[in-house]
Image 1 (cartoon, rainbow, N blue to C red):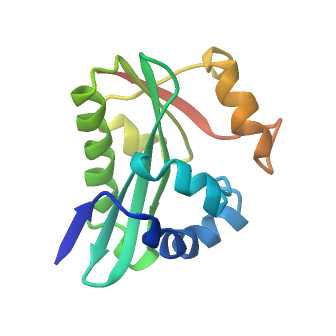
Image 2 (cartoon, one colour; image 1 turned 45 degrees about the vertical axis):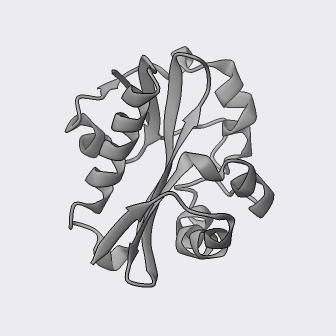
Amino acid sequence: MLRYFKPTIKHISDMQKLVLNDVENGNILVRSESEMATTIRSYTVVYDNDELVGFVALHIHSITLAEIRSLVVKDTYRGKGIGKKLIQSCITEGKNIELEELLVLTYKQSLFEKFSFEVIEKASIPDTKIWADCIKCKHFPICDEISLTLKI
């Protein structure tokens, strides 16, 4: 049975193991234990019994904007709607805390378009995002991700 919940510090090790392949191939930025610990409240995890099968983070950039990031679902669980539920949890949380807009940088454009996200120019992304996160990416400055936003 799948359980979606906010993780504790003790879940970080499992989270880092699950995301390792995506970090190595450049699909997701590496996050240190310390960085994950300081942002642990932004994550939602999914467990199937005692096995971590996915997670996502909703990272707040400003009083109006947050970013959906670090979305990962274990290979053997993909195609079962877990990613969609994690995205929906971020949208719901964004609405609950009265944000105006959600941002995502992704290789899965069509997945986010199912939620009415729209493509935007990367030039419109706040500089704070670029210099805090993007500069750490192995693809920087040649970003091949798609930028999308959703007004909520």
